[in-house]
Image (cartoon, rainbow, N blue to C red; front, side, top):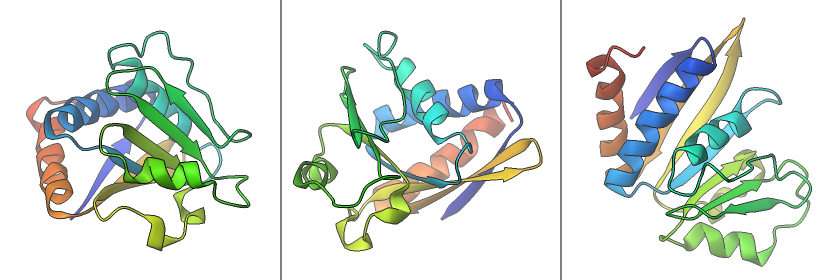
Length: 161
């Protein structure tokens, strides 16, 4: 299942991350893989998602390009991985990918060999089109596909997009 959502501005992105966060908490959807060019909005997406979690207001979300990952003290805890400058995968990163008690975001996921991807995950492809962003959501795994179907209904129900 694939879903595309057009984002015109930061307010649209905040609305989408709010819906996504609420649904992911409800359905225990924890693994998000983010793909897109520099400046496409991946880190901003993570920041908006994290800010709405319990404990997220005090989290300073930034791109973990130099240290590969950041951990935010939210409930549940968020691990934000950025593989942009990754040359060798640290074992710790691979361990995070297996955990079910955290929410994980992996930026530049195309640098992660697919054999390390969890069976169930959401891939969000960020595309720049003029001054807009198109977010394409693809799900792998039954529970995650059901989540995309539910996500598809929300913006329409709430007249958000």
